Length: 307
Length: 138
Ligand SMILES: [Zn+2]
Image (tube, rainbow over all chains, first blue to last red; front, top):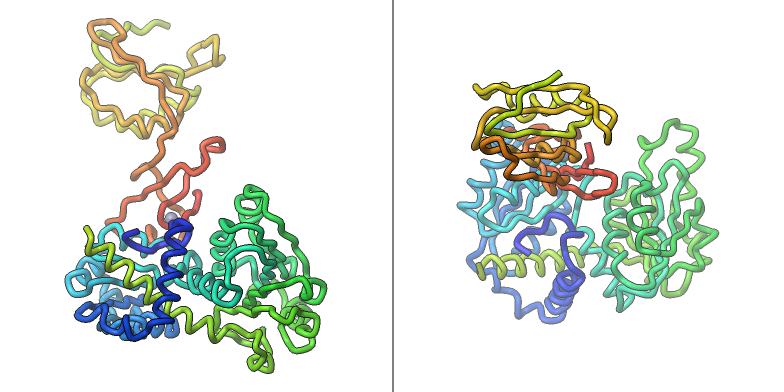
């Protein structure tokens, strides 16, 4: 692995090794505080995403490295018409590794083709966001102690939610996981997920339209935002929006050891009253994001050094 | 109708009827200064009708990937001194470089100028090619 562009490019072994390293960092933080001393991470955000950028920058700082970069296309040479290719070539002269976010699908992939240093895809439009997927996997592994043998409910906008699609693809390689897809019929997962992931791999899945009917079965619930603009009309949105909000009432049916995940930002799809429930994992999930990025930076820099 | 057989050159046979002009264009045969014969709607036992192209030029480097992508049923015969010295069967190419363009407006290929348009064959049975950048299949 030279770059990280798409989480499905990673083998199960590569994923396990990143997650194990992340866990090792968590358990031995002091040992890692200088491993990237003298190294520079460039965060090239052609589109703003403050949380993701800060997570990368915090990760590099905790490894003793330095960060440089820009946080939107306005503050970069992209507004002057410089191509992605040239930006990457130039930044490769200054930085040892690049985390890149871009509104166009496949931009980091092209970046990787011309780059002299490792590229991490920090999100390319509605396409891929592999560090979020690794974060989700680390969270499940830490909360459950395993990445197999559980029932996961995915709730909300399953049609446009890229984090849901890549999480399903990543988990499809682990054994004995049941999927319950909870969404309004307008926002069900795309057909290719059903045919190319579930049916092709003989994976058990069910599509339902309310949380209540399945809550007691779930070991994990992965919440996503249902955006108003995804609906054809206001009436449907108003009718459905509360159905996909997780609150204390719905949690009454849930298992005692349920894990509640959310990629954040949250708007209102999880009631803030749930935040103090020990089953709420989403803030721990955000913290895991930093550790996974630390593990990734170390791994990619090591691999680059070996060449 | 009879066209003299060529002494040295290439014959593209079993072109799907009606596709000869596309093959002619995509292989850029108009840029050659040799004679090129285009035969359309030739009777064929196997295909009913077919097109044939004869290129009267030896040592011409044919882009077989383009050909395989347009019409994988074409047979390519290399003729030397009036004899067929080599027959090539085409296959669907694994990769298309700058043969077709990605039509996804959200794809990086829509804005980045120097970028090569690359497609990979992801489903041989259904002839599905996906853009390596955005994974769109058109
Ligand atoms: Zn594309």
